[in-house]
Amino acid sequence: MQQPRRVLLPVVLGCTALLALVSQVLHPSTVSMLFEEDGSFEVLSVVFWITTALAAVCSSRFNLLERLTLAIASLTLAVREAGLPPGLVPSGKQLISASHYLDAAVPLGRRLIEGGVILMVTVSMIGAAITVLRMLWRDKGWTSLAGQLMLWAGGLLVVAEICDGLHPVSESVRLLCLSFEEGFETISPLFVTLAIWAYSRFFADLPSLAVHRLRHH
Image 1: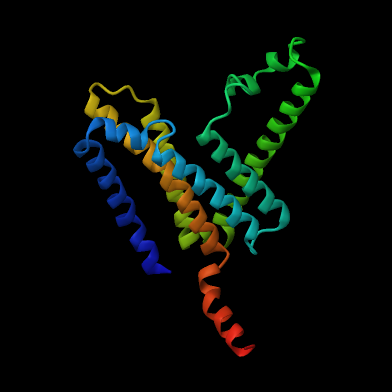
Image 2: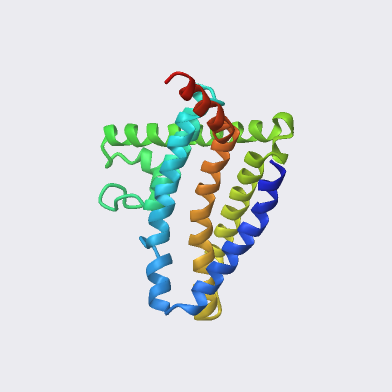
């Protein structure tokens, strides 16, 4: 696994350089189409987070509770990228506001359902974080391919959030930050999916599975 780990840094640097090049070379309208809200990269990030949820559910290394928390957390991040329907939830901040649940104008049934969903998501996020930390801690997991992929995914998400909070001084810098934000938010779930596959020894088990099937045919 040493060789794949060594490839990760060049891959991340290559993706970063490619995103920077695209943001500066292509026409601004094309860059906006790729990286703005509902753009191609945001759609890809939603697809990748759903793929992450499926990978977590199918993993043999996690117990049922760990699989559920990872899947719900991944689907939550997919919904975050896709955005909530304005007609259903006018503001995401509304769902985490205590005043919303104390507002008598909002039907009680709706408040109970929304509160239940928020509680489930919160517990799942905490559970997923604990599962990842345990994965990194076991047998020096941070040195494994799965651990390295998880660390890179987390780091890229942090950089994406930093780019989102910046106030660019020029249009070219704005497009650069936009490409980094959406690009890294797309790469991160892909890395998490690969990390789950690597941790589950999916790739390592392929040769033995192939031999097993050949013997039974």
